[in-house]
Image (cartoon, rainbow, N blue to C red):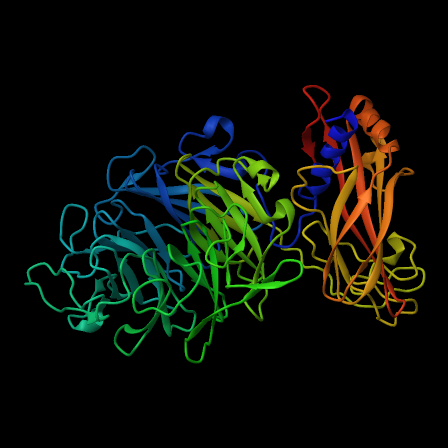
Length: 640
């Protein structure tokens, strides 16, 4: 590759990188040790904490004050206080079933915990153990987040769990709590079942109905200590459960949804006094056909209960379902993607198999969470060492992975497909704070709990109203920034318009367009920078790229920019057009000077769209201040 092509390849990569002000839902890690707490401090990258050996699960209290982490091999529950302003974690306690440095030794409940759930009323933390075959209830102090002595209920009694007699709890894989904070559900892999337990706030006890309403299994059987083999649960009549993993309860309490890694998604009515069967979705015998759920591992619902999302471990991805709150019935959503748009089967996965749309950094997906505002869905791809971020359509439950580096955060950047994070190998579980500001995750390989900041800045309302001299305000564009009579709309690289454009005089007629730079442009063909533009109506778009170099690049619009190139194209209504902008040769010398002398520059790619009706809107994408290293080739050292 020539020197010119190499420099332009760097330009393309940097334009495509995550912006300083990311799109709504994009994740980033705080600076320094605020990004994580680990068992060893990870060489100064994290704060050091106790009780984090092989962390398997993380949960956030509904008041947002605390984060809890289950350390599997250390037999621990670590307790953190959360700063509501920054999301930072400070460890305030740790319970351990053995003598563990920095933890308080307790007699009940902390053995091999690998699933966690906090009751909606915030009074109880529940922990399930697949090794001990138990569910434990820890009373929680809402004021401090401290945990009291646990009540452990299991199949058999032993040191560390005093209360036995439970059934359908062998190899407990997941635990969830109903909206009443008293009904507790757990999956059993060995019994191929769900157990339903009742919690008494006054006594702290967990109990299980002696009738078949206390559990539901594939064939009605379940191991019950002291009893002969028999039918002790409601029966699925030999279909449904094969390997139930994690589960959730719908916000209205009507449905219990279970991710089964062999059968798919299970959907159950919460009948009076217990759980009764309804239907399953996936490749399992007796199930309705569904796509993208053949290795279902985790499941969650939207806050309004109208959407259901399933994380699948192989090949890794997420599937979406529409839920009717009145009946609890499910229908798989249908996505629209591609250019031209074409339907996919309601799922996004790593390799576009099973009729799904292809996604990035979702291999080995083990967890899924919906942001409290319902705008985003996050999936942790364990095999990718990443968390993928998706925008959600509240009306259809369709998902669209955020564009460019906003769409995922991984331990190594995934070859430029994602932003680069730290200590993200082997993420086992994720959770969202109730205020929507943070996502928390646990990395098993690094024995750490990780903190992520979530961009919650809402885009201004699109629409008209820009005055001829600009100053239209958030809902009418910010024409004063460009001196345009039409107002302006700023579009981040994730393609989401950050403001509407108005026609002269504020009539409100616009060609609303978005512009984005592809996440990865592997080859620069004849010095062409490729962007994509989508408009809500037929329009002619003009695109231009400019460069500001040197110290002036620190200050936006503070120096006369160098023109890199310009072009135009026609976009159909609702269609996506690819616009190829041929860069000028003058950029070669400018980039060399920026690298050798100043080591920084700022690039702005802008779009002006003129609709058939004559109204215009403008959009700017990938405006960034960048610093480059001199030595060792041309590569980004840091960006702001």
